[in-house]
Length: 197
Image (spheres, rainbow, N blue to C red):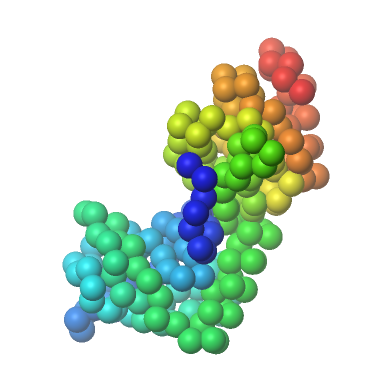
């Protein structure tokens, strides 16, 4: 499961709201993930693959992004879309992503191969929203190391994922941000916690 996307996807602990305009109707939805090139949105709006629609969102107090997108995939109420954005919209999206990662409200997970070892890297928030991708990487990808240098916030679900990685799958925790190192030390100092470090 080596990450081969051109644009890294950011996930959110709490999916942000998005307004969707399609065929004269405006509905609400939530953003499941976002990249510089597009987004995955969950909406009841009947978006059709190949058709453009309008979307408007603001991430965590940043300026409002209002742009057109084209639906490229659809499964149930989940729709993948590619942005039709100009330079200003791209810059606003980039700033919003950077802010979400810095605050821990958003997360990026990627797998890289370094010197024959598979390394799972996480930036931004280490939380339960990463569970599916994290577990897929562990069980299908055979991760050797988890690099958490880019983690800016961590919760109990994120720590639990790391305990599973080290305890059940033999991965080692490599690079650590200050906030992760502190939370990890507290988690391992609880009576009855496994001695993994």
